[in-house]
Amino acid sequence: MPNKTTVGRVSALPARRFGKLVLKEIMKDALPGASTLFVHIPPRTKLPAIYHKNTREIVVCLKGRAIAVLDNRRHRISQGSYIFIPPNVRHAFITTAQSCDAIAIFSPPLWLDPKADVIEE
Image (cartoon, rainbow, N blue to C red; front, side, top):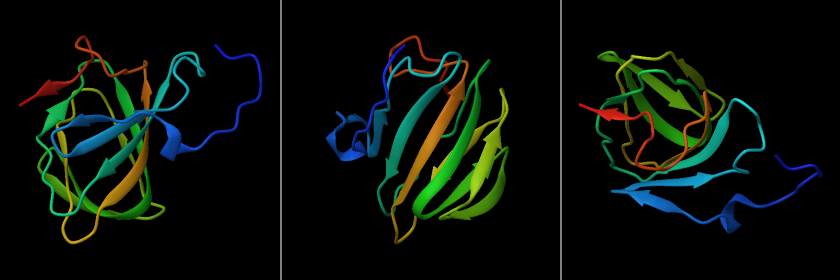
């Protein structure tokens, strides 16, 4: 865990791509019990439905628009919208003409590795 104040830019963080989805880990291990990712979903993208067995997720839309599909119910999100996703809730995101940038906070931490609590349906 960092012991000093840190200021950085998301644009400077290394990106990991999963198909069209772009993820960037923000300060790994900075928050005990949680992880934070920057999420970019390009325009006209439909992400596959996934769920987490043990992980809670909060998604905050920073820019753009998307449709969040939570257990087959559609919700429009835009800048300033947030979503809380409990464990075992199937979820997917769809963008149309606009991309969507968001921050996702996971508890317990969810990092980008093969053991991540991500189950694709």
